[in-house]
Length: 114
Image (cartoon, rainbow, N blue to C red):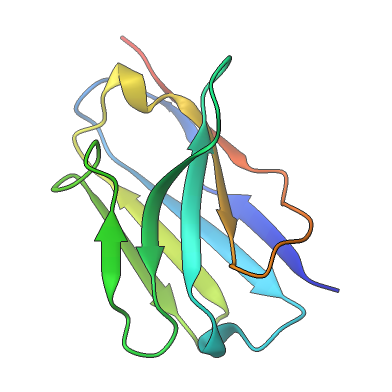
């Protein structure tokens, strides 16, 4: 059974940082690309960052380029999202997922507010 468990969210002030983690299980983690998504209230879910399984090639949404960094530890079945210089518009529920569809995790809430 494929599962994703996100953690690390919280309430921070603008300009501060957070590091999100997502532990995946139920599949060969190293073989698959992983993606962080976010969904703000009243908005559609959007792609934030993407990392391939083998080479670790990354890609980012324009809104987070230069501020967020995605990485992975295949030995721990974990993908990370380092978020620096956070802005109020980064406030959302953050989720990780793979490309094969299926159920989503519970997400982790990030709130950026002064």
